[in-house]
Image 1 (cartoon, rainbow, N blue to C red):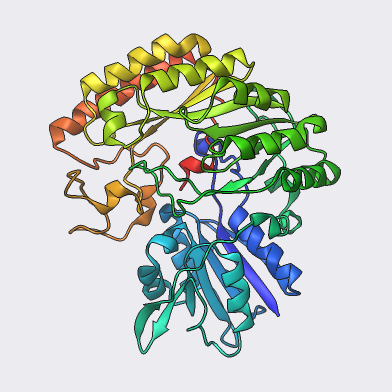
Image 2 (cartoon, one colour):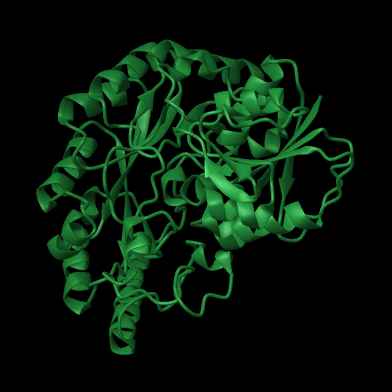
Length: 445
């Protein structure tokens, strides 16, 4: 049975205009790996805005993934405008379908939409390619008598170590191995995923899975050794939503990879690290931690439900520098309630922290579908989202790159926020003129 796994190209956000590749589609690569292990013939297909009408007539199964709401329209168009033969099984999954499976089912007209952890669900659906009987498969949405029906949620795997390594061999090496991407180095590197999920309730973030699952140190080592042998990598970046949560799990990975001589980076909250942990990470090759600071305003941090303080931010920066680890900060400007005063607070804190900061990535706030803000438009006085009057169906407006849409508040508030953003951006350009700003996976959802 021939299976096509279709994903949209996602470009590096911070250097979007340069058309740089972002990390590979791990969801697709894990689905491909389990399908190949089960004996299926798998092809991975990348589509772009300019190249998304495809010939799928040779495939028995066509499975589309939607990694962000910004790519929903692209995959929808690919689904409807491409060619098919002999009534293939059509499946859809990904971040957007996790939050809105019924909408996805009705818009894209697949046979089933996956909801939640996908590998076991995918294999069960492939086994029903001929019968098309899905009612006993957990974690899907499908049409029954013309109406969308959700089956019970799938229970998460006890151990994601059970999964085969992602099927990187199905992608060109140029989509996997990169340089000038690991902190400020030019090391030959690749991306990895060592955990899944994020348990924190930040209101700007669309986290489909709130229970975090870690791979073991032995599993992490096996993947890295494979990439050293296969691709000659010198380093790696962990693209997990929030890798540094469980200190015991992180230390297990550090202990297993320390002798490989690789340099690496990861994303973390500022309140989940401490000095001893950072020292252990540095000893295993960690050269940069990317922290979600988001704002220097207590008011905005509270509104975001970020649950961090200035002390958390200061300590994370100081401990990282003491361990010899570079620091990158992520900032989100323009969350509902942002004003001249909150912008000044962020700038003041940045100025005080500047000697310990190597890089900063600044983003404008966007009410991403699936977030608390998006689902409570009245509470945040949102404008123009897809669940409000006047929606025109343009899902690409949720792209996070340089998004200056008037999302909330009055025109006067919008003008004030815009002016604050330009002031903050000018400060960052002055203090950190090296524009190698490369955000991780956590900011692309």
